[in-house]
Length: 213
Ligand code: GRF
Image 1 (cartoon, helix red, strand yellow):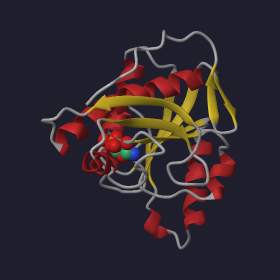
Image 2 (cartoon, protein in one colour):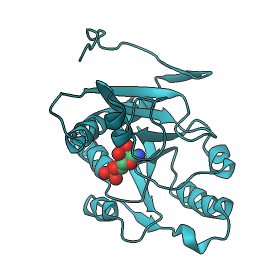
Image 3 (cartoon, rainbow, N blue to C red):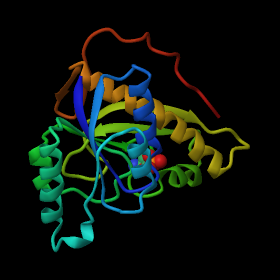
């Protein structure tokens, strides 16, 4: 069982997927705290409905990024959090935060990293014309959308798919791979060797290669 804290800024559908997986008894995680930097984030209501403590820590109340991070770290520590899950959190984090939770912060990105870093990765992939898009769960390091990759999920793009359809399919994959990555962490199966995350123990057979045009 891992004690986790989630950081959100918005809708919180990934948070919802994690909450539901825990409620279904399929994710060995206790969500001890949900922090939002935005008071109006709809994800806060999702946490409250699940009985999870919430805190709003508004980044605009702090002169420096480091001061904001110190306040967030203090709240997470007070709640006894071991693993930090960034779920649609729209702030860059500083070394203050990274050093408080080394290799204990995960993020989800709606692209197959290292392609399409940054904002609106789904649209970037669609406009680029890739045939296979996807999403990535990774440990957070000092660079944006960069740390060691834990799980990726692929989404084939059909000829008639709209950008919105691609976005929807990527989000559905996100909702599968984030709980999976947290479960692997909870089971103590993730070993980081340089950039590579080695998943220890038994795993499903490799799927056939996904070929798409
Ligand atoms: C997701 O697309 C995630 O990959 C990105 O921010 C979005 C958050 O969506 N980091 P939600 O708030 O979980 O619905």
